[in-house]
Length: 130
Image 1 (cartoon, rainbow, N blue to C red):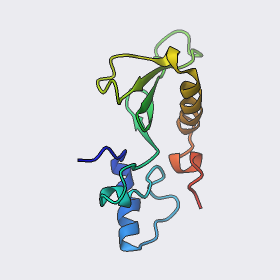
Image 2: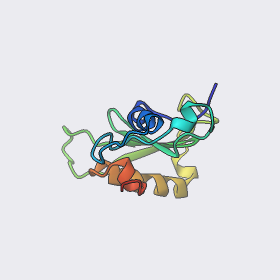
Image 3: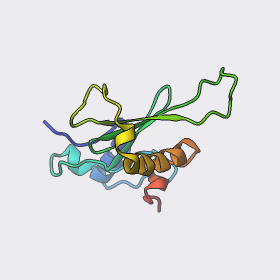
Image 4: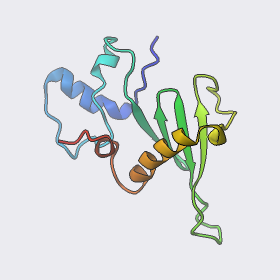
């Protein structure tokens, strides 16, 4: 059992590292090399992962920031996104939105998530590009 933070987008870079194969810079733009976590040599995994569904979400360890995008059918098209913040170590079911209790964490994660939403890859945001 592992609590390492990983996602399927990490497989390409991880397996390439295992095989000592170069990955083109534009391939797997959000993937990170997590081979040590996959092999059980490290328990941390990635510092961040991105999730996308009806909105966007960014995980960092126990924290998950959800960006709910405005409904495109609403009259006010300039409405700003609304955020939810969860401490998954204490609330794995995401039932208690604690966005108002941790403004510094919301500011940190939302700054990264906005860059990603606007077209940057996770690797670019984290400075992992060559």
